[in-house]
Image (cartoon, rainbow, N blue to C red; front, side):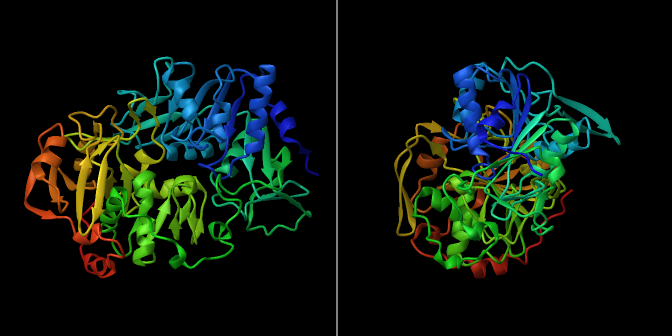
Length: 527
């Protein structure tokens, strides 16, 4: 029989010095009441203290919810996370050197859960070489207080790899949909299944405590075995929360869990802004039959373009959370999709990514330099971390980086087939040297990756010599609006073209036929 406890009782089981794994992805799969109860216990009693917090990716809603509740000095001594962009309070603790902090690639974190389950010492992978994950640079350490080296360079079979050391987990907070009387947990209403099975196995095999929150209890043996994600013998306690949200903005949308399907034509196109312009130009890089990853930010707006164009079924759109097919969401719905064709556990998604299975990936940029290096992980007072960016950017055959040319107050007007710039941003994104190497342009050139950089006013390609300007927006001045806003010299293609005027007009661009034509182009060899 299951042990049914309250969120408060679950929080009381956390001990000083525990290594706590919190499951979830963005706003999906988060045991919110249990996390809230742990914060309340610490604020009112001062205990527990000195936790090591392990989380695969960003869990929260920027300044509220999720791990934002746990951003208390004293409660957390060390954090090992895949991303901090949805946890600004944790960024502050890290930036001010008040906790130890490590950031490892999201795929490595997901695969590390499997490694911990099998009691392997960690993960050996090529992911992160020649980026700030490499211990010859920063080793994933996020501040001066963090001194222990948890990443090593190792040589196997005549080549270099990175070894990421795994901690020993002692307690986990997970979430599902239904639990039967023996504690078997299914996830039929979840929009992602994450790495919760691996986490449960890891904590159980380490002799720790596994707590899983669900929305309902069902009769013993009544769950379809294909729907069971965590066997009952791995679960120590169940917390019942009938009104748990599917995401931080959706109570329950059956089209995100696969229970129903909605007509994609019902999705409203986003307004035609400079960000929409970038997403539209990026969508022109899609090819029939592509298997695509879509990152956060502007890149996550591309599915809305695909839906407006009616091309979403010409390729397979995926998100690192494990969602395959359908139309991925963004903002608080990032990591989920309308009408997914499959939802797999996140470590398996990254196995596919790491092996070079992605035809194309669309990612955002914060900084780009003369060598084509990209920084999305540390800039200004932001300590976002990598998420799946490094796993994806090092392994996809084609890469399309997306972002505005300048930032902070940029004002533009889009319409009538052209772009007008009314006010430049306060800071430049194309800089002589990026603040942190999240993507290594030289390594990409060596490996033969096809790399583009798309902004609202210009398109660049990466060559072995650096960036080459290939397209410019109608209505934009090459000298005043591009060269004057970039802090380094770049090549201009002798075949410089205008960006397609359709991008700058309201209404569908009708690019389906273009994709059919482009699909005949062969992608170069990649290894």
